[in-house]
Image (tube, rainbow, N blue to C red; front, side, top):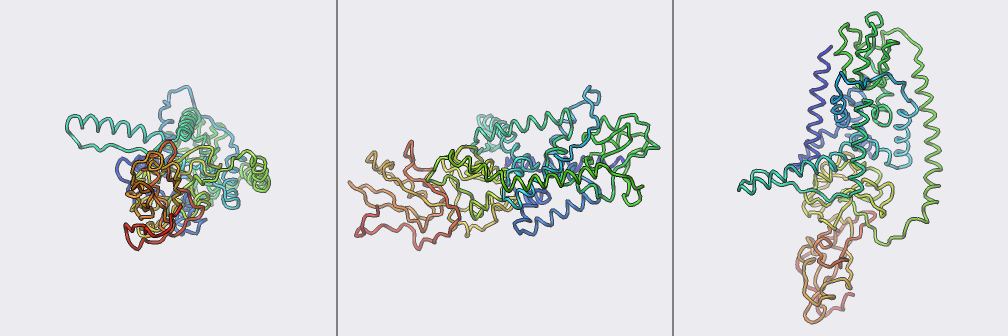
Length: 514
């Protein structure tokens, strides 16, 4: 059975490299590759299924079927964050003084977190536990905010050096605007994950990971389980020292299969063949005290979750309401295809795939006081640094959860995510007395038109029924420090009208529109 480790390594390294290539986006993102890779990621699949998207159920059934057949093969082969931790584990030499030892599982924590996350999302419509602890999302955030900037720096340095020599073989990489808060959080999470993996192996996977807890509970029912043969085992301890899940008790000659991440290190190192797959139907019945503890933990956490969903959010909201400043402008603008801010909040985990795939880099995850707890890590349109390209729908094609529903270019042309607002007092035409036509020139739907002002000058006028809120006017407006035109997001996206003609001039006989 030693070939199992070779197969596992081949699959996990391949999947990890493909995910890394996808999130680095050093070349335009391949949407088909993105869909294939994210298809079997558990949290996105569950969110798709909860939203009524059939592919989500299929993805869940595939992963569930694999787990019920042979345990947590997802954790060992299909989870990119798991492979990232394995890199840190590999750095620890077999001769290192730091050895893995069997640790009794914290069932109330590892099974409680997925249950709480499930109930909080499905009944409370709150995605925070999924955004913070989901392994796929965390990998995406770390890659987008930490690894990609480093890779972009190297690529751009090479591109510049070759350019100085007259060689244009390497294209420079454009980065999205990075919020310092997101970068710090991602860096801290990466350090904690790698540090924990170095000293305690897959501790995160067996304590805090909601996917790991869910699959660990399912693995109690697996048809084939890794088990120790007490007659063959001589308690040498080799398998326990190499077990990254800390699930092998070499003294008691037992293996906790619910914690096992199917790395097959134990199978590979044991020279006596004491560890192998056994069929659960033909094993001797044993009193499983751990299973009883698991059931107690699940019911206890369910009761705690009911209390949490019923009282704590309401109490927090009432206590914090007086601390939240009243902001008239809605600063959150979500991509076309999201449908509404509420729907986007409920379905987006903040993995960052749309951010790294966005060609114009208008999507940016941000942490600041203007956004609520639910919206932390979730991307929004950042019109201070870019605007949404009129003919681009790639974010809707790569979104793994369906938070950005796939739309066509024609649908996007009339999908109004917001509405432009004009502030006459900030306009450079008014303040400087000089002509400016930037917003009119950049508006793709001609929602902005120029009307008479004075002294032969013209100022913009917004035709709301044509505006889709793409942000081209806000990004290009030269007024400083405050823009003369900005986009205010719609809570629920609207449908704009198609312009009957382009470049229509305002009738001079009509009243001044302000």
